[in-house]
Image (cartoon, rainbow, N blue to C red; front, side, top):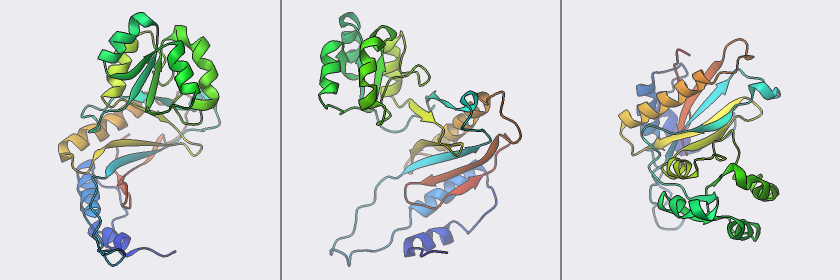
Length: 242
């Protein structure tokens, strides 16, 4: 085993060193205990680092063949208790819809001028929404927004006739997901400061959502493993009935 930091070793100790799956409630409590562990590194610069409110993430290892197009999972989900912060959203739409999109929370909305602004190197946004009628023009931004994961797509719910509703949802914390080559999906479910009950609701909503969208061609065990961790903690395996 490679070198483990003092903080990591203390976190493992705080977590009880458990390797067996635990309930969602116990998993949340364990991750919070580990996230609370701090190592005094004031000797580095004479100042103690301020603790940050870490994001808690759930990782689902799914029994899918990521090489098969009909088993790839991509979409978006709205968490019942949100993520604790708003997201910056823009909307590619006609002039008639632009004003309503801005009222719904879009920082920028419009057609050709917005496309030119993004094409010119402006990327100060998290999510881009587009009306289907705009995709003929927005398509050329694929080479720019694609690598950043910001290109509007129907599967992610970011290409939709109801631009205003989509802006509201994504600005409030609706999040996109896509499985990686190993069949894993990573999703934030809240902050360490969230009440345990809110985190539990969000985690269970994520698990329930993925059970519902299980590909028909997926064979064998589907929900192979579900893990929970904060930004800077080891993970905890959750017990699921799926």
